[in-house]
Structure formats: structure tokens, C-alpha cells
Image 1 (cartoon, one colour):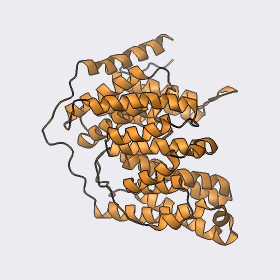
Image 2 (tube, one colour; image 1 turned 180 degrees about the horizontal axis):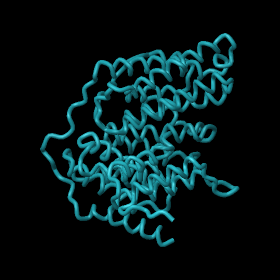
Image 3 (tube, helix red, strand yellow; image 1 turned 135 degrees about the vertical axis):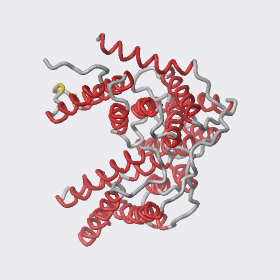
Image 4 (cartoon, helix red, strand yellow; image 1 turned 30 degrees about the vertical axis):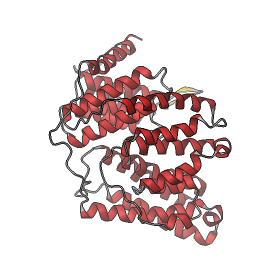
Length: 401
């Protein structure tokens, strides 16, 4: 218990730094303009085309279950896995310096390979569920900040694919066609009937829409319009409407804020710290989603910071704060991302107070993940990894028993 209290106290100290830091009105040069390297751009175009094939394959029960399409679906999944793996090869450099790109491409590659292997084993329903969620990694990557281009229209093929609006919207978001994505998501979020008959898809459409409006477009008025649809929908789950009431307040506060444009490392760190502390104070309990709007804003500032200074003096704290944000923002199809940030934090600033905080958050998440009705059962290889990370995190070496 005492160790937990110390962790909470140290975390509170870091978050309370925001009261002594002013977000800077920087005019210094910040993140360099994002430019597409030819290799990276070529792979992205190939991934986009393959995603169209994949979504067309899995969106129709008749098409997916037809024996004549089985080999074609497997081939498309194999191609997707191969393209995703290529993104991790040496020499394949993203134009975006944020380490999150590497984290997400690794997760994307693992899931694509997983889906392909399950198809080979004959576990087609399971493989289909993996493939259905895989575009979420692209959406999360492309909506991290307002940096990068928004493509107005790359393909019209999705409209004739048989996919539903949430699948089409996620494809458009995955390929940076955000206006088209929002138009498709609106068909879902504006439907009172869908909020009752398909609540999980309806909630996902709301969450993806807010991610685009808040992190990429950075338009509180647009986000307010999305939230108003939730608040006014009497058929929406009660808890979701309660969260939306607080989202609305947060968005009104943002709209009325004095504009600030932090673009240097110190300014972005200050802004990210301010927003994370605000969200942390607003959140009433670990699973409370009422601070999502502020966590989305904080995560955007952190990603911008990691673009500007991926090796800067605040990189370790940025990983810690990003982990805190993504522990709450798990429904964005990124169940493991917070653990990746905590691990990266430990390796970035080993034997430091920040690394110790990251280790304790990482350890708690691992224990929660392996705890069920039968108790906690952690595999031996995971225990060994925990031991190595704990040693790396502690400010003084752990003495063997």
C-alpha cells in the first residue's frame, strides 16, 4: 500500500508542475514540415489499395464465406502482412519523427501477420474480426496531431464495396480522407436507431469523429456539433450521454480559451503537462471517460512534442504522460499502446524517478491484464521481463535476495 501511495504522490508532483509552467507563445521554428519520402509514400499507397480489397472481402458475409473467394482473401491478407512488415525494415523511414509511428507500425504488422496465420489455420471468423479492427491503427496514427496532409479524395471504390458506414468511415480516416470519413461517421452518429441496435459501432463512430475533430482538425466547434448529437440522442446509453455532458463543457471552455500556439519543445511540454493535469483532476475514477476531450487534446500536444524533439530533454516525461492518456483512451483500438509508452519511458530515462513511475504503471497494467476470476497468473517470460524492467527503472540497483 505504501509503495502505491508513493507512486501516486510522485505522479501528483509531476502533474502539479503544470501550475508553475506557462504555455509559451512561441514564435521559434517548431516541427519541420512533413514531407513524404518516396519509399514510404509508395508503401502507404499500396497499403491503402490493399485495405480496400480487405474491407471489400470481409464486409459481406456472402463474399467472405464463398469458397471461391477463400484463396483470394488469404492472398490479400498475406499481402497486407508483407506490406506492414516492410514498414519496419531498416532504411524505411517515416517522414514523421514521432516514435509513435514505429510503435503503431509494429502493432499493425503483428496484427496483420496474426490475421494471415489464423486464415491459414482455418480460423476464418477469428481472422475476420482481426482484419475488421486493423484499420484502427492507421486511424489512430493519422489523427495524432494536425500535422500532415488531408487528402480530399483518393478513391471512390469504398462506396461500392458493400461495407457499412463505420467501415467506410474508418477506411477514409485510415487514408487521411477526413472530410469523407466524418460524413460517413455522421450517418452513424446521427442515427437514434443505431445507438440502440448497434451501440458499440455507434460509440466507435462518435470516438473516431472526436479524434479527427479534436486532434487533427483542432476545431472545438466541429467537435461540439458531434457531441450535441450524443447529448440530444435519448436512445443513447445513459452513461455515454453523461460523459458527453462533460465533453460539451470541456469543448466550450476550449472554444473560449485565449488562443495559444506552443511550438517549441518547452512550450509543447508545458501545454501537454497543463492538459494532462487538467484531465487527471477532472477524472473521478480510473474508468471514468468524462475527461476524454482533454485527454485527446493532451495526447495531440504530446505527439507534437515528440515530433519536435523525439530525443529532447522531456522525451521520458512525454512517454509517461502519453501512457497516462492512452490508459484512458483505450477504446481507440489501442489496448496495448499505454504499456508500450511506459516501456519506452523506462528505456529512455533508466534509473530515474520518471522511469520508476513508468515501471509502476506498467507493472499494474500487466497484473490487471493477467487477473481474472481465478486470480492472477503471470507467464514466466512476462515475469522475467518485469524483473529486467524493474532493475532498469530503479534509481539504485535492486539487490538480489
